[in-house]
Structures are given as structure tokens and as C-alpha cells.
Length: 299
Figure 1 (cartoon, rainbow, N blue to C red):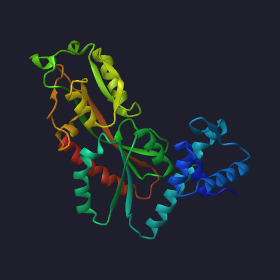
Figure 2 (figure 1 turned 30 degrees about the vertical axis):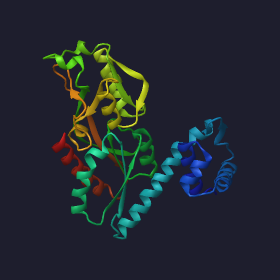
Figure 3 (figure 1 turned 180 degrees about the horizontal axis):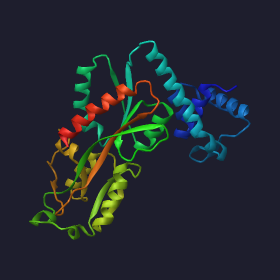
Figure 4 (figure 1 turned 120 degrees about the vertical axis):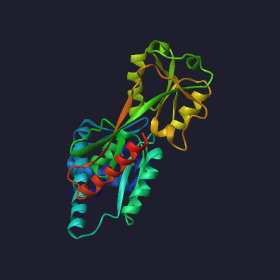
């Protein structure tokens, strides 16, 4: 019979795609990981992975089974939480996933409030790409997720929290800032800087650029909001910055200025998510409520 550890190896290798990196993430040697994987494939009578130039990728059989494997890990985590809950052991920590376009500019205040209310609670923060973190939430590797919407995943409870305005910024000497009232057509042909295409930010910016007749820079993808702000300030292009970032100590308008067309009202919807069957769903809902209060105050 295959083991939970083998299923965990299957899921982690599918996510990472590299034997060495997956072994390190799981605290195994590469030979030990390979042995466990071969044992799982032998027990199933299937080949789950094939080697490709960049590492390992799922076979068609592997792709058919990966969702079920994630479900097994999720159910195992929820069972352990439920057992702890029945035994009256409080949740000592929450493994919390958040996008880097949101967490650093909202969570510090949230953490202060939570620590005051729940001094024994530990928030283990993990920043990452929302789509990848949604998979980790579904498989039980994360307990909660804070992300722009949409958040998709079978068996997840998604709690909308607040709307955050998005602001267009330009360098202080940009011709756009010479106009008393900008119109949408003033942005036609202009170039916007962007983040990694896997971020919600990129997909939303694509829709905004299409509506304005603008385009996205194909030369370089920024790695953070700080990078976008600084590149925009240098004249490399326009940028779209969330209100929470602008109002934070890390953001502001030191090197850029707001430049928006009349009637501009773009925003992103922010939500929290957790597994519907989680034993500590009530606690996660309280954490989400704190985040919503802080987000509404700041945005």
C-alpha cells in the first residue's frame, strides 16, 4: 500500500518539477525521493512523471491523479486539525499565504491586532504567486490565503473582504501631468510596466490597457511594486499601484505622481480563503474579519 509520504512526494514534485529541489523541500536526499517515487509508481502500476530538459513533468496519468492526491493531503490536514480541536488543543499557528503585492503593505497592522487578541497564535507568512498558493491551500500545505480575486479551488470557502483602488502613476516630468483634466484617449499608445504574468496584477493590467488603448512593456517584468514605482519614476513607463502600497511607508509618491483620466475608478477585490472543512474555520473567519477592518480603513 502506498503511504501519505509518497503522496506528498508526488504532489510536491509536480509543483516544483525538479527532483533535487523537491527533495530539499521535503527534507529528503534525492536518492530517497527517487526510491519512494518508484515505489509509488510500482504500487499504482503507472508512470507519474517523465524527464524533460528542464526537469520532471507529469505524464497524462499523473495529471489525472494529481487533483485526487492534493485532496488526500487536504483531508489528512483537516483530520489532524479536527482531532486537535476535539482534544481542546488551540491552533498554535496559521500557515498563511499572501501575494507580495498586498502582504507587506497591509499585514503589519493586522499582525499587531491579532497578536493583541490572540497572544499565543503564530502567523507563518509565505509570500508567493496566488495561483500556486491556491493549489497549496487546496492540498493542505497552507491554512489561509489572502489574495486578489478571483480565487478558485474545489472545497474552498472564499470570503470577500474589501475593494482597493488602483492608481496610475507617472514620472513627475511626464507630459500627462501638464493637463488639467486627462481623458482616456490621452493614454493611447502609452506603455505600462508590469509584474510576472502569473500575478492577478498582470491580468488586470491587460484589461485596463486594452480599454485605454495602451500597451504592456515587453522588455522587462518587475519583481515587486517597489521596482515598478522606481522604474516609473525613472521614465521607463507608466505603472499601476494599489492604494495600500501608496499609503504605506514603503510606497508613497516620492518619485512618481498620480495621473488618471476623468472618471477613473479601477480597483481590485481582495478576499481571504480557507478549506471549507477546516476544523479552525471559525478562527480563520475571525482573522479574515480583522483583515477586512484594516483593509477598509487604509484603502
